[in-house]
Image 1 (tube, rainbow, N blue to C red):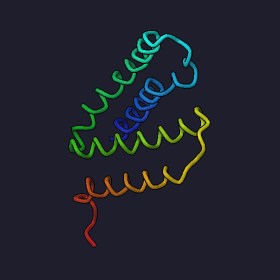
Image 2 (image 1 turned 180 degrees about the vertical axis):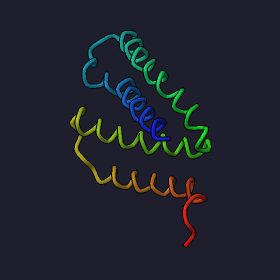
Image 3 (image 1 turned 90 degrees about the vertical axis):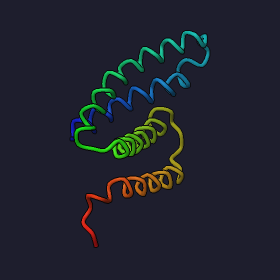
Image 4 (image 1 turned 180 degrees about the horizontal axis):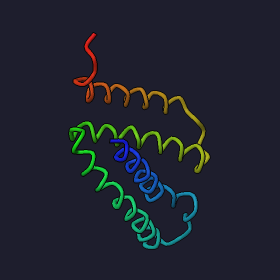
Length: 115
């Protein structure tokens, strides 16, 4: 189960750089170059993401896998935006994170102890 989360984390690193990394370094490059460059990065995303979901589907429901992916995406994106893109830390990251905590609660609540 942990292997799925680790693979999804690294998959998200590749995805985030494929989607947004060019905004910092390739603003003045031709669009077609940037598209192919991003696709080459996205290849490695899929190399990790597809097997991670296959492995994870043995332990998690489809909805749970999706919420895990979104939580990881928000964590990776926040780190990317702050550390790589030098964007300011905003309270919006906290609010978005709390919404994802709520989503995770509803997707995983069947396995939680009842109070």
